[in-house]
Length: 127
Image (cartoon, rainbow, N blue to C red; front, side):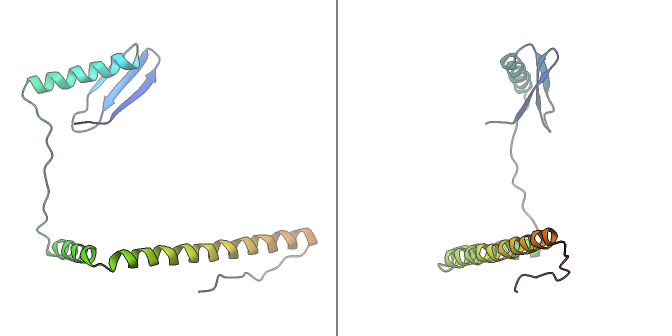
């Protein structure tokens, strides 16, 4: 099992810190010594009988159960992957159109400012 450890320099060397629920910290002159010190703290907890376990949380909320059922049925549908791909393709196309409209508006703004005129008409992207 791996757990994240924040390793940061401090004026006297390095500090290694774990997050909740362990909340362990150790300081040492080198990064490797600080990590070894945290490993020692973990070993001490283990020796005293402490264990790190994961617990599956199940929901009794009928809405969440229905969402899980729908998600499973969509994932099992052979057309689902095609739908996801087409949705991504459409989104990419719309973003390109929006980017082009923004670039055109910016170019018009620059042209207007260089001519000393102000264009109050704002072009909106096509729906």
